[in-house]
Image (cartoon, rainbow, N blue to C red; front, side, top):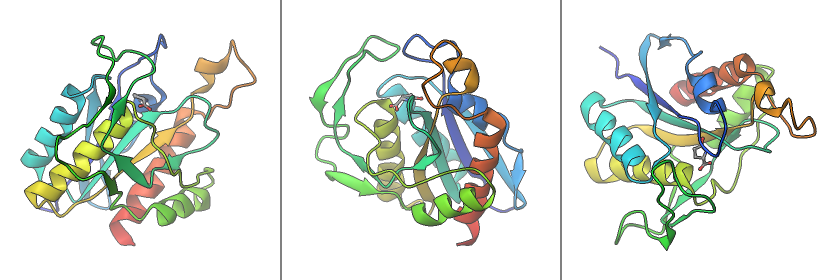
Length: 203
Ligand code: PCA
């Protein structure tokens, strides 16, 4: 059996009715390049979200882990280059927690670079007709925390997976009442993610 692929998205947060990341992840096929795609919907909660994906990694020993989150205002798919060991929340998470500059893992490295080939991912998405570019910051909210926890888990548990994070723009449904904000339909976001997963397996 080929090792599976774990892809995560998030539940809604910040007063939104949906989360563009889960809308895109749920449209992904259940198999890519002959490998099972395990899809997880994570809570927008510091700690619990990281615990959930770390637990799934220990169980499934995946070849690739791609976590996906919504970044309202971004104009295209953005593979993230780096996760930093800090949490700093502008708004409370869905459990009401609002960390102000604490580390994600006490004593952990200051940062991890994605082990996914981020430039290849962006190119693969563009080649599939879905605009994408590498981002140099995943912020300091729950998404950065999930990316950090995934890379830390792979590091400390010796899981030889290519891991990283992709932010996606709002969906059109989320921008109807603010038409000047960028959006990307979920089927296109999903096609771009599928192209990125294939690139992560071959490049
Ligand atoms: N985006 C948030 C957390 C959940 C999500 O979809 C972020 O960028 O941190």
